[in-house]
Image 1 (tube, rainbow, N blue to C red):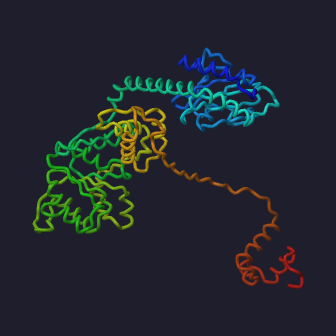
Image 2: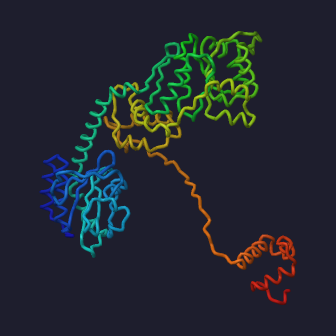
Image 3: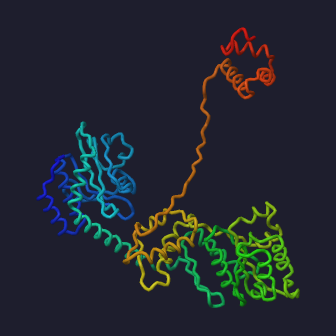
Length: 495
């Protein structure tokens, strides 16, 4: 490869690329220039698409009549696009990373470099050699990277062009899919006595199944138990059940974990407490697993008898309250531990619904993120495919609450209309521990070796005490000494 760059040729190339804003021309001209520079068999130009796949569109300065695509992560181009660093293989036929690339059988070695700008990879250049003694090295990387450095302006222009092109394609797709989405998307706006306007949004099958089940049971007056992790929307769904129920009374919430027993007792059962406020309506008991046995007994009595005695006036009051309880802890485990009354659990669990966590609702992340990003905003912003991919790869321990907070923060901190992956915070990666079952391998042992090992292990376990070891082995001390002597572990005089 030529070590000195021809600045005049580079300047001419830069002018051509700046005056022709077309990816086919860009990769064709660039691959042709590097082909002349490297004097190797073939130079390929791959465009990195928005979904992470790579498209071979030029070779040795010529556009291909039919482009070839590699799936995300495949071949050297896919690997380099994902890792954002160059890679060279001087034995492509034995290299597993290079095994899925696009090359002729005669190719022996290949080097692949990312075309990067501001942390984004827009394409790769792959240089292939048929020479058996060709060993690509760091010096080759330096030369090609120097070319990219000199072509900074054309590369930046191509990045902006491709980003706009991909966004336009996404927007067109959104317009075409809008009618279909509206027919399947659950976007429910209801009110707490015509005041609550919270929303539940989702497209995933497991989410829709829960919502449909909630709709079916809403018209019945029996209690409902909603379980799920923190932030999955248990209180929101509870309010929806109240709205669908048609009950005329108010929907009120008792936050059990925020109050001690005495405070919660008065909050629920005083003459102006939540039980009275919810009469004819719905009482949402949030975090019911945090209640004490005393509160559980009073709740059970109210559910069974339909009446309560106020803690401040000691009056008996008839109540007609629909109870919806929620818990981030599985109540059955509390029952088994003796921390929750079994009869109350069965009363509340007349209908039990388990709301899935965000990591179980991958199909909903995009639509929820877009909603939280632009909800009640004067100017809408757009998530790029890269940003959506980054959001989808996170496991969301804080569920919808965490997603909402991040989207609102990102809206405030990001200038411009488009939200890219770099505008989002760096997310912690979920640690997945893979259990590997190691099967014991067979090792050949003679009976003599097996006996020797067992005797030595027994002595070691008993601290070398020969009397105790002999007893454990079921032999005499003399026999033990004889065996140890035969193993060469003691002298004959020790017998």
